Image 1: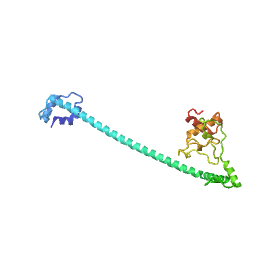
Image 2: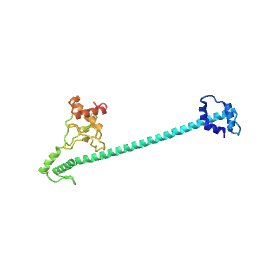
Image 3: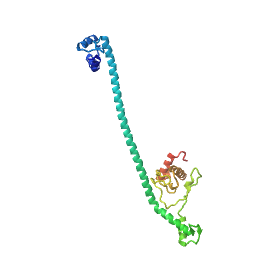
Image 4: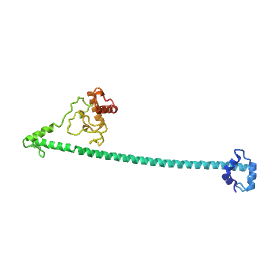
Length: 262
């Protein structure tokens, strides 16, 4: 048998047998000759030859062990990467499902809000037709053809009374926007937290309309509504002590979200 092959197979056992003591190469070479171990040329190894083979086998086994360790670490890293990618895919799938559920809830809320406002829109259309009749206006030609009837006069009076302007302190833009002073129809239901803004499709998140203050119907973005209402609240209430719970909530939110509110 080749001395190199034998050393590759038994190097560890030989080291354990000698327990850290220096190897007796003379005695080992004698034993190598007895059992028929030879060098690469088929000759009995000398001490110098045996030491050289021992050194080379040690380097070879060390390199092989390092390669095996590297392959094991690479396999472990690949397994961890697969686990991480699987977790990321599950998280992305859950996030997508969450967004789809949010879109579905928003669409359902929008349909529910539209259904709730349908009677008010129908009533507004009827009032508009009554007003046209009261004015004697024919829509196709835009000409007046008859005097309004008493019933139409009553309908016109009721229709004109629906739009009201809030009694608010006036501040010129941009401190308070012109939207805060737009007239509104008090027969319409107040905007509630969670309703959908028809202009943007986003959900109103900061409370609902406050009685006596501009409605969110006049706005597209909640930040603009918070700025106007927050400044109008402070104009009416020097401190939060006189505010209602809902007004305090809007005031505190406006202060935290609007820089330089006052």
